[in-house]
Length: 266
Image (tube, rainbow, N blue to C red; front, side):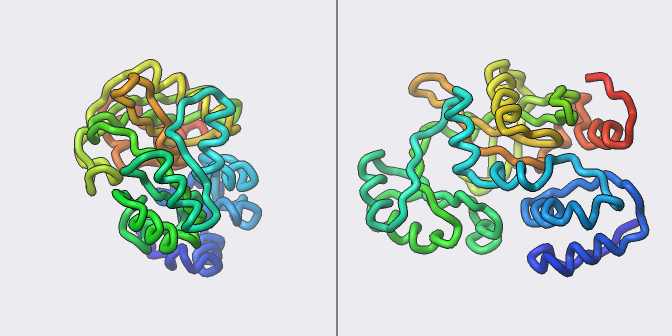
């Protein structure tokens, strides 16, 4: 039964709408960060209506910052690109010159960034571009990150559903072949491809984050040394999860069955 919600940017209106629905204990699947965060922050109000395929907000809040993801990965031994967290445009410029161009200026706090700029990061080829990008991204806690070389076909994904006790009930591994826009974008063509290192690193990170539920962990293979380095964790469904279902790993169905109390075989 389709219904039209208020824009999640109006968080109070969005949550009030969900709280007023005549449903009880229904699994809810957020497809973007803004509705996910709004639902998670309002879990106390919505707990009788919905079942959540993600952890409580006090856990999710750190996962929803790129800095939290990268710092946790470092502590868990999961490789990451070189990253700095400057507090001024001047610091950003100096950091970029130290890392070497090109670099990415990315938001640590991603909520609203893509809606505002139509992209997930700024690629910068010069110090002047870094300073401009830092100024524009300042409300989103910008960080400066090494750009891992290689094309979009070096991007690998672990899609998974972990039960509340951390058991992996569904696992999918694949890689992008083409994304829009190129470099930092959304998968348009992908393939299922099992890479054990990607799967194990992804699970190690999810467990270090105390995460359970649906997620995508993306890595990029660094052609200079062959290591898979963390790009990001999306603690929700990802846009090409239909490929996982086509391969027999229907992540939303697995989540639905687990949340509603069925015994799910991994």
